[in-house]
Image: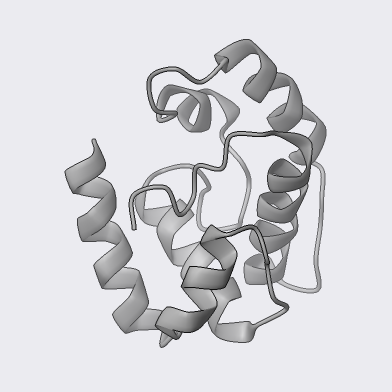
Length: 114
């Protein structure tokens, strides 16, 4: 699972052009309003099957992809509360969902494998 996450992340870094500095900051919890980071987030979530092409969150898939040791019930509650978030476009919507999840949980999954 983690190896696959690394592969997807590498593809999405290329596709989005996000800087390693921006990713490093996001990994620490400092999520910048950065267009490349938004593109990376959408790319990663879409390729992982967590969202569809329209940015609609699949809570079941997202929960299933959580690493061992994460309280899946807790994460599911947070995700259910975040799935209605919207942005100005699909990429922005996915980023809003990511920020909502990040704020609502102590387990930060998106950049865990990078």
